[in-house]
Length: 483
Image (tube, rainbow, N blue to C red; front, side, top):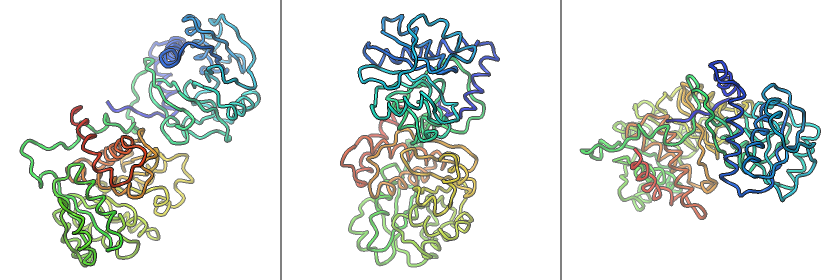
């Protein structure tokens, strides 16, 4: 089942709903604190632990965790930044019979620290003794486990409030991940994120999800027993001129490897010979004008345009011609930049089956200022999809995919090994190949991004874009076994 990603407000509502339905807040706190203790016991050898407790319910979770660890024979000290300030936190603190001392100013390297100072709901920068401790921890890098989020990290953006936050090697959160756990700014501070079930209900009408196979695998376009190449989808890829043909071939090979049955590179006449010298199972067809291109794409289920296509009026006219064919479009790279001065003309060509795949620079060219004025990438990508009337995939370590209807996903398996030339061309091929096979465009973009990242992570160091299509079969085989 697809897992939702929650805002702080949604998580607060889930807590309140559980209490309103008869589960006392103390019961939820007991479950949360025990989950923290259990997670630490399962991942760390027994050792001295210092638990930093704040004044609110996050601190209450820390007091409960302290009690459970001490009951299991761990050496535990609580350092209280402030007196408990909520009824539940006072209840939890009253049940802790161990040592409580003031917050230290400098952590040592010989202990494990649990950050239960402030959770995801913090809205102001750290201050006073807590800020002093955070600065010291930044310099000394102690081993920290965070409860909910590292203190100082904004729960909805993942950014450090006032530029100062703790960094954890593991974060234990409850019910569902929050945005801070999945967006790049927060993920660096959270370390490994563990989600504990404390018995809360489901969120109504969720629209932000973790991008993993649970989101889309049930609708993956596996071939039927009697499939043939044309029934498995016809994908076409527009090539650039002779000196810039490799990107289109990478996209075409990605589409072929992900399952499209018939893949064709559409090539300007001057690039035919060089494309022909490098293609085997992928077909090749010429075009001389945008009218020729439209005719060549009439029978396509999906067309990729942009990888090294050339920036300028010619590419813009080619895209406009393709838009009239009815094929779903994957618009990447140069095709996006060709509309940097008239993005509305691009949007007029699109419909909800089309996919835009910008990196942040290309995103800025067609949605100027949107990233800067948005609180985080989810909000920006959703607004971009609404404006464009198409699916938008914003690349990055936390790739976000948004549909015009508001459905959004965030990728969790991103890897830095994909930061290499041509990687995005293969991603466009994976997405186009899945759409050509009949997968709905939002889910195809999500699946393509996940498969792409999985391929990159499996190869690791030394990855180049040419490796990616050949890594896809093993990933697909595992997905097929799980279907």
